[in-house]
Image 1: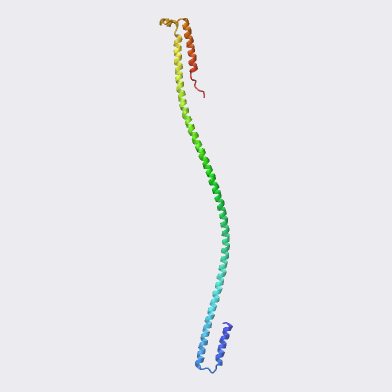
Image 2 (image 1 turned 180 degrees about the horizontal axis):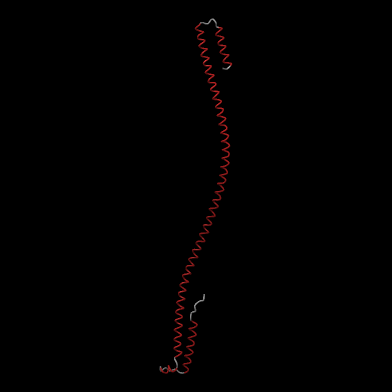
Length: 204
């Protein structure tokens, strides 16, 4: 109980006792008032104690919350630093990604150019291979025909060469010695011309 409240109660009791000439009814009323005041005082003290207890609890909770706020503040600062680091890394990675995309685009363009050149070269090679086959067939055909022509020409010239003066007279042809010389010269000329015109296979 607080000293001031005790002093107030004591003063009230003293005043009541000094009023000695008070009636019994007044005394009973005063005692009831004193009891009421005492009960109120006890109730106030209980409430005060409860408030002090609540205050202590609030102070403890405040201290706990302050500590949590400090921890969260430090964590927020750490998180911000990590976020800044991650943002910086993300910027670097984005830059690298852009450079990689540019390099990939250049490589793709170069690859497409090389592919187009290779396709063009392959088409030309296939065309030349086809032309080579055609030319080879033509050459083989001409060599065959040339050989046959050479053989035929030689047979003709051999016949004319063996066609003597007696054969000519027997066949009633007017050949003389001069004609025979001319004929032999013609045979030799034709043999030379046929030999010159004969196609020769190309050596590989």
